[in-house]
Amino acid sequence: MPEIAAAILGELPPARRARLAKFLDAHGASIDEGVALYFPAPASYTGEPVLEIQGHGGVLVLDLVLQRLLELGCRMARPGEFSERAFLNGKIDVAQAEAIADLIEAGTAAAARAAVRSMQGEFSARVAALNAGIVALRSYVEAAIDFPDEEIDFLSDAALSERLAAVFAGFESIGAAAAQGALLREGLNVVIAGKPNVGKSSLMNRLAGDAVAIVADVPGTTRDVLRQQVHLDGLPVNLIDTAGLRSVDDVVEAEGVRRAQSEIARADHVLYIVDVAEHAQPSGISADLENLPAGIPVTVVYNKIDLADLPARLDDVVPPRVFLSARTGSGVELLCAHLQASAGYAKSESGALAARRRHLDALQRARQHVQNAALTLSSTRAFELFAEDLRLAQHALGEITGEFTSEDLLGEIFGSFCIGK
Image (cartoon, rainbow, N blue to C red; front, top):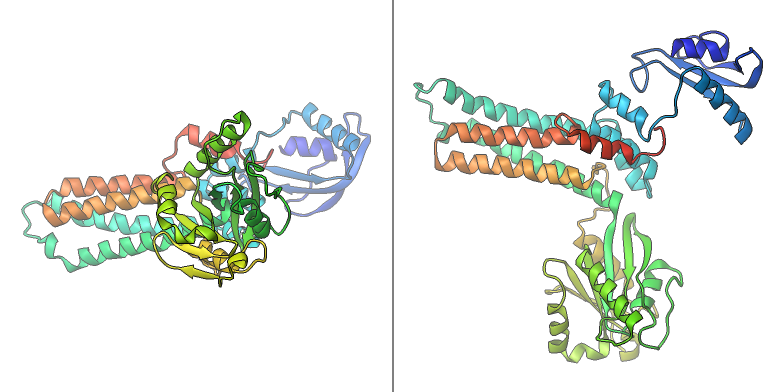
C-alpha cells in the first residue's frame, strides 16, 4: 500500500494528515485533484496501511482513478471486506462489525443510537463481563475437581450462590438491552387479519397516516398482501394487511386467503379485526380465534364503534380487546400503546444495544447452560457436569463476539454489508 500511495500521489503523504494532492496516471499526468489521507499500520480502521482519497464527483473521473489504482495492483473490495479485515486483525469483534452495518441501515434515531453503543464496544464489554462471571464460577468447581480430598461444602457456600445470582442478573440485564435493540433494528411484524369488510384496510390506512390500501364495501377488495412500515413513538412496526379470511371459489381470492394465513403464521403479533356489531356473539369470535396458529400473540380489535355509539376502550383480558374506530381514529392511540407494551418497548431506550436474532439465541442458550449447571449443583455433586455446562455457556457467549464463529457465519455476516465497508 505505501508503494501504491506514492505512485498515484507522486510521494507518500505524511501520516494522518489531510493534504491537497494530484492523482496521477501512469505517465505522471494529473487525473484529478483532491484530498489524500494516509494511515500507516496498525493505526487504521483495518489495522493495515490505508489510503483515503477524496476527489471530484463524476462517473468518468472516478472511473479513471479506479483504473489507475487497478493498474497499480489494487482490486475492488468485496462486500464488508474492510470490516472483515478489521475483525481479522483484532481491531473490532464480530458484534461491533455487525453494529457498523446496523448503523448504516438504521431506520430510526433510536436504532442508530443503539448501533453506536454496540459499535463502540458496549455490547461486547457487557458480554465479556458476563463471561468473566462464568469463569469465576468455573474456578470454584474446578477447585473441587482438582482437590477432591478437601472438605469443601459447595452447596452451602454463600459466595458461590452469590456468584450464580450475579450471573443470572447479568443475563437479565444484557438480555433486556439486546432484545430492545433487536426490536429497534428489525421492527415488530403485525398482521391485520379478519373476515371481509370489517375494516382491516381502513385500520392499515389510519395507522400509516396515508391511503396505502384500497377501501371499498365490496367483499374481497384486498386480494394480496400489503406492507407498510410505521413508527409508533420510535418503535418500527411492519404492518401487513391481508385478504379477508373466508371460504371462496374464486381462484385469485383463494390465493389471497392462503397468503394471509401464511403471514399470520410468521407474525410477531396478530390484530384480529371484528365488526363491533358482532360483540354480542363471543362464541363465534372464539371459534375464529381457535383457527389461528397457537403461540402467536393476538389482540381482538372491535372496529366501527362510531356506528354503534360506543366509547373507545382497552380490555385487559385474554386475549386483549381494543374498541376503536378506524374511520374517526377514536381508540387508535390505545391500540398503539397496547402494541408497544406487548412488545416490551420502552420509549426511554438509553440502554438499548444493537442486537440480532443470533445474539438473542446465543444469550438464551448460554443462560440455559448456566441454568443446567445450577440444577446440577443443587441436586448432585457432579462437578464435572457443572464445569462442562459452564464451558458450553462460555462457548455460546463467544459466538456473539466471534471468538467461536464458523467461517460460513462470518461469510454471511460480512456478505450482507454494503460494497466495501
